[in-house]
Length: 328
Image (cartoon, rainbow, N blue to C red; front, side, top):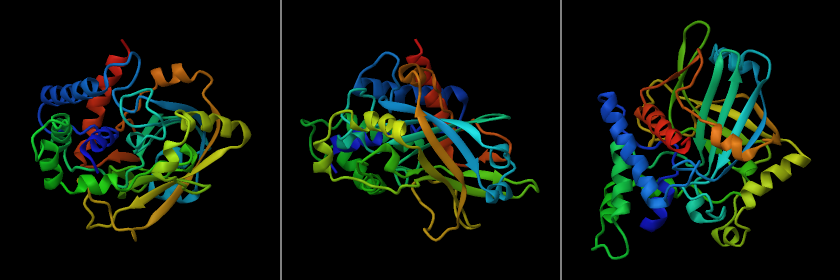
């Protein structure tokens, strides 16, 4: 994978790659530097996110399964259906990037559950796992790629970084362009923890699997599509039929680590269907919805907690800065 492709792809990640430890001032400084790099690479676009700038907002509901209540005391899993707002998006901070561009991968799916105890946010993307293990490494990746233009001496900073971090190429080798936002599987690369009514704790990772199945196209096929084919297709699809996703929780075994998002758990780990998201309509004002929506991965509810994964806190810090800039 070429460095230019990797740079665009790496920046898609929902985890904006910032260190979680240390004082708040240091964390905010690193977050600011990361958003600055993104704004430098892709420019500043008024009202747009620094990353995942192009997207579409849709609405619907979530209905839990009986199995969900056994794992978590969260009311979204034990009560009646709740309303949801979902934003699907392309990578990069380029709002005019063609949907079929390889740089638009991986795609994102961010979900806001409107729970009686407060909103619950879940942020996912189509990567099978995260490309680097720490926030410091993510910022180093962005920096190395930014310094590896066509005239950079060989081996470039990007070449050196990729050689030292083989998980980067492996992670981006797991993505390709879907035929529709509705036909992609989205993964929560960060681990969280369920807490049930008896206080039992269970580490897990979210996965959102389309009921209709996952379907991708080749790079050649994607290149032939209209520039806005994904963001235009979903509202049209919803005007004719509902779109549904299974909300799956992959459960960690006792020996599985939760801190390193570059290391997926074994495929044989138990998966529980927590319920179904059913999307029925596009947002009435898509531009306004995208401008006002803010998803924070630590916005949770009793029964769901953060794990020791440092990127959760890191993403929150960066999202707050990005939101502040697009709000002005």
